[in-house]
Length: 501
Image (tube, rainbow, N blue to C red; front, side, top):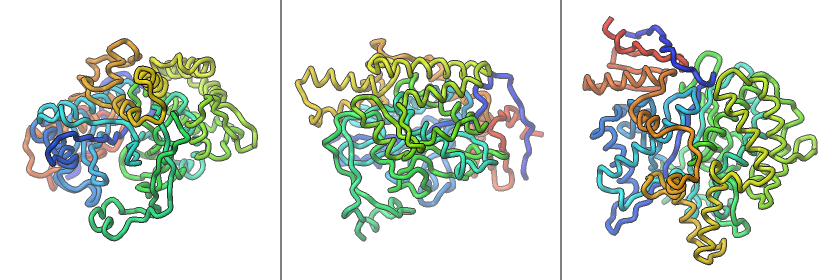
């Protein structure tokens, strides 16, 4: 039986007229004298969230035999999803669908709280730390904070319109980058896995077409982006060793009608709420401009990937961009052109106006004195923290200890995090209050389908269903009954009540 539910709008503020969300892959550091491995830790955290805290319904069936087998995670009562990704065995948290920047930030921070609380309750908080940074300085690995946006698909976005997005995407790091000490070089020589590697870790090499090695780059002291050195494609579907700006995905997440999911791989986990909000708000406005065909072709960049790395590594902060027409333009001025174009959307909602105002102000400060933005941009705050440590300890940029400072900035436990210490001292702007984050641990956004799905997850937990299947756009209550939630903009608020009809 398929239940087609009446859509219901609960009258809450709609926010931006777009669905978006983020998925964060967490690094795990285990420091114990026993043989406890990180694989066991991430499994223990996941199992505690679902079996002891009862914050969600764990998957009884595989979503993907290779990457998300049965019992590897599930959907939460806040509308999001927590799971262990089989590739790399890392904890991953996906926010619920949001249409408000404030809701998104609260939901993202709630994921940190869920993981940290589970770690403490199983007694591992002193020996294990989770990080939402995007690079392993010593191992050369990179892991992401991926963004998802609902975009119009009728104009073949990924085939045609995406060219207008590249210049913005590779330069927004001037305010959205989280910063990193040092750099990496890609090495394709001698990096092919041997048969023993393939036999021991077969899932790590599924869909792999290009394997490379990574070496430290001693020529770089500090750069804007943690992932810029690892991006080697503009678009790629096989991304294990083909890190790309964009990964085309056509599954149901955020797809509806003439719209589809834009999955951005090039992004990083902002600690600063201001930078996080500005990143999401400006990207939404950029997509609005592209969908309305308002971006001129003269702003196409000559080489997106070369621009990405040069902007990230520019120690003079001039950030010069080579355009396709052979002209050059500072990244700050490029974004000023985007601001001018996006003014056409002013007045439609508060978050749009906030984004426009702060986008323009941030660009002005970046041009005058980037270091004045230490209270709102991650890369500036991190650089200042690192430089202060260097001064206190009389160290140079080649000191390995700086990588630890870099990493601890991203520790998600407020008791350990350098970023949270900065916040407690009043050194970081906030845009959401603590109560909103606490609420987001157990409550979904009130103006997307995450609301209805969250009610169904609670229903499944209360009924102790022996079999079910939860997905983004539908919930199978048993083998015969499926509740469809096709429209991500609807709340399906009466979903449980309508089950009894």
